[in-house]
Length: 406
Image: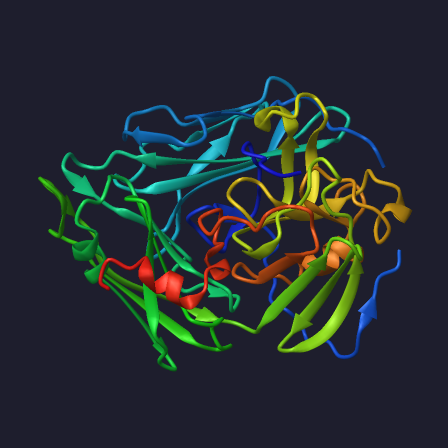
C-alpha cells in the first residue's frame, strides 16, 4: 500500500528523522543454510485515536496542549518521546483511570527546538487493536535553525544507512552548513554530502558501509549563518555503529524475496508486490522505521475507501511516501509467491496480530533500521533518491555533484 501518509507505530526508540518509536527492533541471529517459506480479511474499528497536536505540527510551545484520546475502548499504551537528540527522552505522562485519555504529568513540558514522536495503541470493546504514530516539532527561537537528523545516537544500524539532516529553515549558504558538519568513520572511508533542495542534506560513502564500522557526527552549527540573519544553535557530537550486513532482493515477477546476510543467501520468502495498476517502485530502498502494528488508510492518498486497515502487523517502512514491506493476514495463503495484489507495498504472509513464526515475523525480527531492500522487475519507475533514503540509486559521480563543497 504505497503513499500511506497517515501512519501508526509502537515501541522503543531505534531510529529517528522519519521514525519515531520503533517496536521489536531485534538484531539478526546466526543462521546457516537456506530457509524457504512456502506457504483473513477482517478490518479493525474506525479511526479512534485522536492526537493533539496534529501529525507534522510545527512550532509547538511549552504550554500548548498535548493529549491522546479515544472516544470509546481504552488506550493500551502511549509513548511521547523526544527524538534526534544525544539521548532520546520520554515525556512523562499517564493514562486516565477510565483509559480514555493520556496527558503529560503535572509540570512536564517539552523541550524547545526539538522533535517528538507520539505512539499510541488502543483496544476496543471487542479486543481489536488500533495504532497511530505522529510527530511534531517544538518552537525554535527566532532567527535560529536546527537540523533534525538520523540515525539515532548510539544506535546500531544496517550497512545501507544514509545520514540525513532535515533543516527547519531554508539554507541559503549550503557550503557553510555542510562544512560545519563533520562525518568520520573507523575504518576510514570517504563520506560525501548531497543536497536535496535547500532543506535537506544527506551523507553516504561510495559503497555500503562495512559491518562493524563506527561513525561519528560532529555538529558545529552554533552561530553558523545559514541565511541572512539566521544562525545555527547545535553544538554536539553523536555517533552510531554499523551492524551485520543484510540486503534483500524483491523480484516482482518471480514473487519472491531473497535475503542475503553477510553475503550468504539465508532465505527465499514468497511475497506479493503491487498490482498492475498500483505497482511497487523499483530500486534500492533503506529501512527507516519498524512498527509492530500500523494503520494503512487509502483515503489519505487518493485511493478512496479501497482499504483502511488499522492493525497491519510487522510493518517495515521503505519510503517517505509510504512504501512498506509488511505482514498481510487478509490475503489467501496461495497469493504469496504467485500473484501481485497490493497497492504498492511488498506483502509477506502473516496472521492477525502478527506471528513470530510467519514469514513476516521472521523477517521483521531480523531487520535493522538501515538494511537495504531492492526491488527489481516491477513495472514502475526507480524510486526517487529523496523518497526516504533512496540515495543509493544515484551513482557516485552524481552523488558527489550534489555537494556544496565541490
